[in-house]
Image (cartoon, rainbow, N blue to C red; front, top):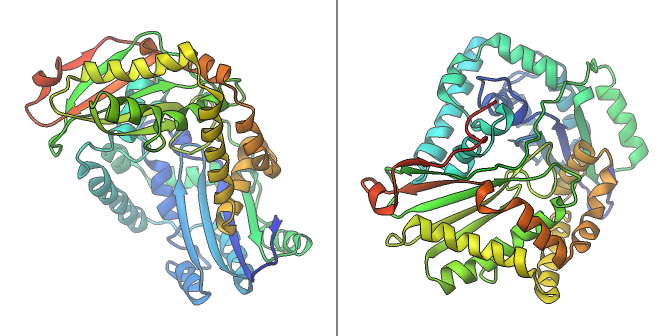
Length: 426
């Protein structure tokens, strides 16, 4: 609970500690599919009722599947709070699941994949393809957006089992920010959710992975692309490791804006790249993750440049930080930007409710989100140098190069170069 009586509105988040990394083997995209099914009604509130109540209340609602959590959010005038608490408790109790609903939502998810992935010039390769090359465990390496074969194989039995395993109070966080009194809302939560069977806590998959020991590069054609691009990824240490927060700051220092090291070094300096993006834990943001996550750099580069030269320039920029560190002035500006951006995100009641729920899911304490600026502030130049040298070396990297049709030979050898423990699921 985070009371804010300044205006008569609220943001509400129900977070379930299940994401793409918990979905069953050979059911890639199942957590995403299930997010859609959660909006298809219950025995007491048939399909359409949730949105009708939301619209009539002057509110909004949404859902999002991430690697480790799935969140459902609503924002509305405070007069609608009881309605949304009832609706969320109702769909936590039971869903109206049948074959027609499953088939419909499966087609919706597949259409999303066609539109967002298959129609993307590079196939969203940093999200869809890189994890499979970088990691070895199923939870980390498979495509969480969805695989057509796996989605077609999903059954009503799979859906019911998933719901009974993960969509229970024992695996959920309810968070509310806005014009509320904490004692009153705790009473309402007990009223609406108290009778929902808690269920056992699910067993978490092992998501930790050590550093890669050998680089791997694959060159793949991108039929819709007109210029080449590459993505380079590295495994990161588990949460709580001394290098986690330095890597978060390092991701911003390398990638964020025209003053970032990679923009100055590869776009303006060497004139190899047209654009750079990336960072630490980009799928979920911040240091919120279980096990290992990834650090990535995506670079759109000029067609005449061999990809080996682009990767070499990337390595040089990272090696310079590992060797020389970063001066206090540059680091201070980056840390201020990171902390300020996070604090701005808490101004929205809806975002605050979500961040508090995430803090509970990963730290067990909603107030830990307020420690974010202090944790960022503790990062030193020596920390950045150590983290860059330990985790972002060339031998620990997996990279995918996407080239326009017929351009493989112009940009390097076809297929894979090198090998390592990160190819394929364990």
